[in-house]
Image 1 (cartoon, one colour):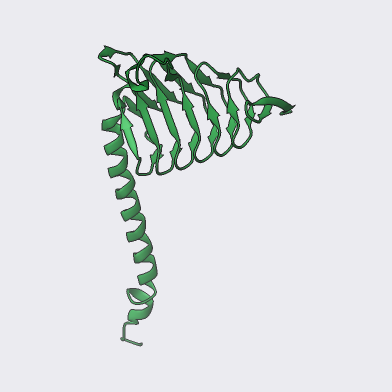
Image 2 (tube, helix red, strand yellow; image 1 turned 30 degrees about the vertical axis):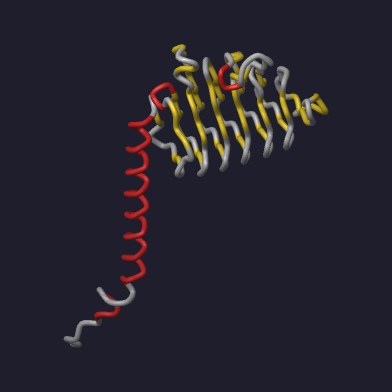
Length: 204
């Protein structure tokens, strides 16, 4: 009988790739857990299975809810405006379950802004429920805000560089073309494009 132990087959080189793989997985899970704890504490709610890369700015996080299974890439600027010109506001932002937000997006609300479930928001998209009033007798930053509730429905696709302006409701399954500026409501299943955005087709 061969009394020698084959270290290669038992605990040797063959076990190294498996060990490295397990260490990498453990490192990833630990990193994900630490990020989740960080954002769970900063938001009103943050879904257990959601992932957010390093954001650019979070303002009024306790007025913001992030649903389950959301994927948010880096550079997000998300702001709930709590006060303006010494006047208190009551903002609320909700991002629904399964929604994906790509890099460099800006979402801001002074009243109520809601994004539905399973939406895809491409890079550099701007969504807002407020804008600056414009008068000639005072600086822009000293003027009141114009506030109108904004809502994005479920399963909506928003193309890269688009702008969803205050007071707009986008219906379920709508498609917003790249670089569109949406100033009016978009019906469910509509495909819109242009500046300002107009219906150019229907999503069947």
